[in-house]
Image (cartoon, rainbow, N blue to C red; front, side):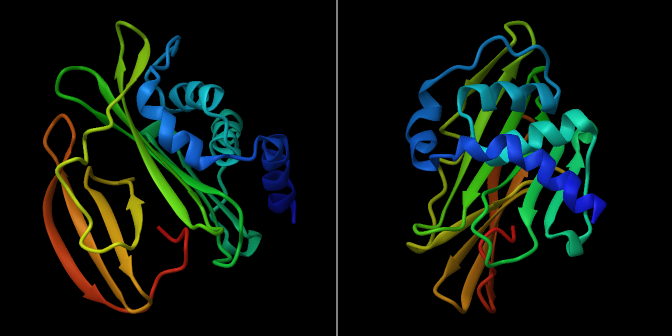
Length: 213
């Protein structure tokens, strides 16, 4: 119960910031985010959320600030806070929930910069999940959108796509769900600067609940 109260306390300040994912999808690639104090995950997410406020990323910022993590499914809201290693993920254990979910991670680039990826999803009609990539320049202290990273890859079907960011390792996975009984996983390996398509693993099975990335 105590953990649940803490989780709700983290969420309440963000509820008023109901996210418009469509607006973010249409605009994030055209706006450089300046005055980013450092390349730490918390600092970058804070500036992203000040630019594009959402309930889930706001919740992540609070979790990182308070050092909070909750991986107990009985509490409903799962917060995996590994910000010191450049990763955070927040979602609901209940697959039927309408709450927004998110994940974010950081890769170190070969040129001394960092690549930030943020995934935001909303399990309501229409079900939607987006991914945003930013280059962090430690000299300019800014996040520059990199919207072309996945341009060389196309989904096999007109279907729901879910992005799975790495907590361990560097591989990005894109899971494509077609109907209720088909899915395939696209693997992207890290080349020192960005994830690049490697191979596709076709699978057959029941459709995963929205947000269960």
